[in-house]
Image (cartoon, helix red, strand yellow):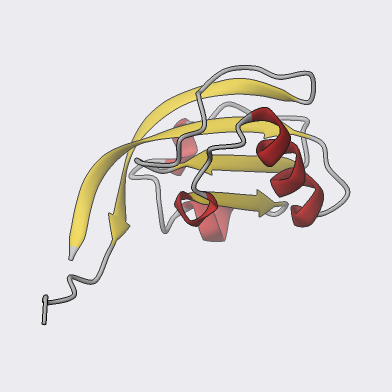
Length: 100
């Protein structure tokens, strides 16, 4: 099923996705990293899977975007390595698993 959600976006510079995730763990130890997407350049193709209007994002110098999906537990707040880009309308796809 597809769900309409608000997606928080942070931007920063990291040498790899693993380093971005490590920074998130340091910044928000309670984070549910299954609800976080780390995108590296080029962003357009993957952003289109999440944001309704990826073109609404401002031009950015940073090489990494972090998408905070609902339930991520990561605050939409700047850190020493990340800046807040904003919150944007989007969608996530989740499979509903029946209870046994």
